[in-house]
Length: 290
Image (cartoon, rainbow, N blue to C red):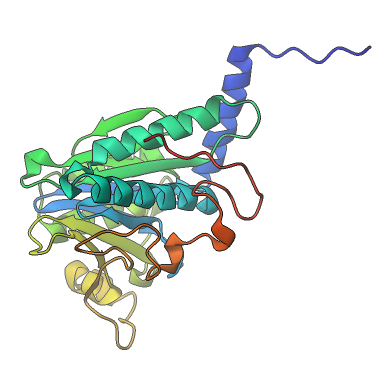
């Protein structure tokens, strides 16, 4: 009778970590910056439909890099968890720290399980507070580790290069236009030189504490980016006809939250598939803990 090959636990975890890191590094970087009035998220993303940055709840945003189908399942699970907690208790009970802990447990369970491959994703969970000192930004890695970031953070792509460019810009606490300009320059900074990213290829969203609504998430349109970036932005791409200045993530009610809001088709998984089940591969569901 043949014997199975023995692999030490240390080597197994190292191989799974290398696999996840290689998948994440192939994507484009996402930058998070704590500016004067909130938290800015920026990424190079030519797609107008597949978002890397999304709203989770009133004051909470989600950003991710890696495999889209995997982090989209995590986003949907986070929206459902936040809606259920806010509906069952109080909207103030939904916090960025609570969602980060739920994501950490889910990612850690998947990474340590030998029955499936690890998720090739890294996440940002940001929550804007009443003051800059109350803002929270968490970075979660593929193996469930959580880091409390301050000032700015980068994940995916050439992390060290982009982070170095942001560190030299000293953008923490800067106005929105300065923070945005520094983030876009950092995203275009490479080891071979700098490049200018067209406005149409940028995905930018903010959690703005000064917004006079319960929902603080705002997605910046190309027209608004052109205004904020000045000549650099308008020289690269003209705003789309009929574009609006600001928009918010659809499907999140500003009063009573609802589970599986039918107004947002991205929050639905066809056929009643559980939150974390991949509808393409049929991987088993792994729901975040309550």
